[in-house]
Amino acid sequence: MAALKIFNRDARRLWLWTTGLSGAPVGKLDLIALIRQLGFVQIDTIRNVTRAHHHILWTRNQNYREKMLWPLLGRDRAIFEHFTHDASLIPMEYLPYWQRQFRRLGQKAANADWYQSGLGQQEIKNIRKRIEAEGALSTHAFDTKIEGKREMWARPPHKKALDQMWYAGELATCFRKNFVKFYNLSERVFPAQLRDSPGDNEQIEWLCNQALDRLTFGTSGEVQRFWGAMGASEVRAWCTGRSDLVPVEVQGADGTFSLSWAAPNIEERLNKVSAPTIRLRILNPFDPTIRDRMRLERLFGFEYRNEMFVPAAQRKWGYYVYPLLEGDRFVGRLELKADRAKGWMRVTGFWPEPRVKWGEARFEKLGAELSRFARFVGIEDVSWDMRAQDQAIT
Image (cartoon, rainbow, N blue to C red; front, side, top):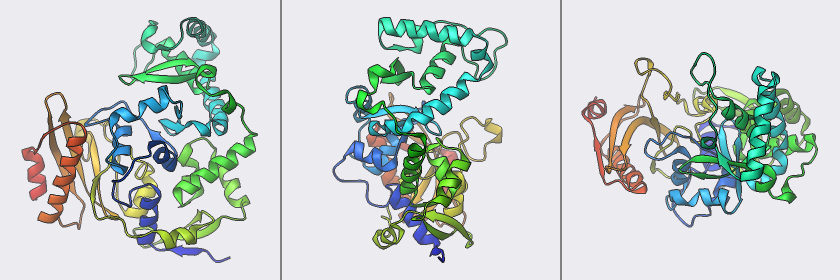
């Protein structure tokens, strides 16, 4: 069977359509349906203008508001929190297929020297006993200290124990308050009817199917990286063992074709997809459309990296830099800073993409989106600092 060729513009449009960035971000909001469409939403501690999870959802439907998300976790139990490639919010009905991830990550944490020495096991017993008696507790309820030399990312014993129990699915995030995570025993959080899991092979089948459905097309590596819950060899075996997957040759931004796998209804999707809105969008650094940097550069020719933890002198761009998407191409990058209490937001850096002309019309579109973004978080004062203005002019 000859591989179906997908040319670059069609590939870009398929990917944007699949990740919810094709149509205008308006209309009635069904929040849990939006999370299901994405598969999960990454959460992040940094609040630059707004935290990543809020921005990701608002980008797809600007009727979203920050207060809408956490009741799905703490009140409705419609989502749960666990680790994909990072901490993420996942639809609760996916829980039966997540048991292997609890096992994988729990075992990885249990292999640490700290746990094997016996210190970790005793700390876990102490934490379990307290939560059993007192109910939900946050890390602030414990007070163990780091012993020995202090190193970057070092964690006190109680945090290591909480992490290990959370990774293993013994504890679950029952709610967050001011973004602080509160833990409870998983049997008190996860619905009883969802705690039984199918066999491991069935879980792999489900995870791979769901990943490819949300990619539309991808290499085995891209399928594996989607959830981060399977090994590379497991995904390769799944791809080659499925007779209904469609082999496709996807053209990259550089004109070359590479072999991928596509969902069985790929031709139907190709016929359905249309040109995306020409609206200019400010994407979050953790947006699912750009999360897989290799896929991003292959399809769009757009190089991007997060530089929050890169020393300032070594940054290519800036601290918290937002990709700018217009239609089906990336046209630049923007650095923003904000003080919500004082009601201001500043453009502190601007980097147009090579060979993209920034005329008055494009800047007007950017200004309109900046204003919408500011209104989302209750800011009225939007301005550019001199450095960013100079970058825009040159």
